[in-house]
Structure formats: structure tokens, C-alpha cells
Image (cartoon, rainbow, N blue to C red; front, top):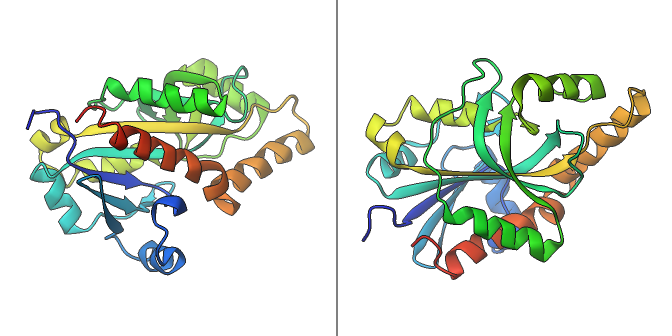
Length: 244
């Protein structure tokens, strides 16, 4: 086995229903309250789906997950979510692969390993969906950014094209419980689908329209909008044995 082979995968944020068909709702409601997640076997890989929390309130993953990362059993952490555009050129449905993840408190990108082959896979999925694909910096913020001027200020200040509220906080929490060698060895893939654009103006209704669509994609109908992309990503990646 090569040093960059894919073994087990930790898949964070909301679960893709299409990948966990059996007893989906029972499993989901049980797992939201614990830190073990749901583990399935697919294409000779154990995939653990974990809902880590919202915003900075991140769960501590179960000791078994930590052990699997530190022992090299989990080689990849994958995060696919819905994010808000900071770049006014981005539109709903655009798919963004992170080139750097920047926490809003330090503004220093978190250093992680990324698989080069992932870019081609995500682009393939975007092409299939007739969505635009970009590789850009993504901001993790502890505050909502809804108004037009707030988003544009963040875009100009951070040079990040997308904002979301969990990714860096999860990695930071996880790093406290990982060995330095494990942190340097694990691969991280972060994908954001644009769910809400920079509003056209400062009017309240413009802000609410974008906020509503973002909430619809990320929470109310997560599996309809984001679940299919998560499903397509995992199957395209593992069925074609890219990077294995």
C-alpha cells in the first residue's frame, strides 16, 4: 500500500441520505446526540459520517475516531457543505473546492494536505450538473454575513470567496486530540456549494431572500440540494479508485 493510499474516511457535517438508506432517520436522530457518527462499508473503505456541531460548538469526536486517525486507519477528512458567497461574481449552485481554509480570528490559513486528484473529480461533478467550478479560499467565520456591504468588506479584507461557519473550528478542535504526525499525514477535502449570493442591494428583503434560500439548502432540504452532491462525490471518487 502506498503512503498516499485512501483507507478509511471521516465525512463531516450533514449526512447524505442517499448513502445511508437503511433506517436513515433512526440513525440520524440517534447520531446527532452522540459523537460516534455512523460507519458504513463501501468499496473496501469504512466511511464514518459524523455531525460535529454548529458554528464553534463542535463535539469532541469519539475516542475510537481519534484512535483511527492517529493510527493511520482514517486517511481522509471530507467536508461538503453549503456556503455564502463573498465574491459577487459567484452564483447559487457554483461548486467551490477549497485551496485554503482561513479562520476569521487569526486570518492564517490552516496547513493541511490536499489530494491533487480531487480537483478533477469535483470538476467532473460540476460539469455533470452544469454548474460552475472554482478553486478558491474559504473563510470560516463565527458570525453570520448576510448584508451586501458586510460580504463585500470580508471579500476585500480576506480574499476569500466563500464564507461558512464550521470547518476551521472542527479542524482546530480535532488537532488538539491528534498527534502532530497524524495531523501532517491526514488529507483534507473541503467543498462548498454556493447556497446564497451577495445580495443585489442593502434592502432587507434582498438579504432575507438570500438567507431563506441558504437555510432551505443547508437545513430544510439538505439532502435534495447538497446530499446528491455528497453522494456523487463519494461514488465518483471511490468507484473510479482515484487516488487509491
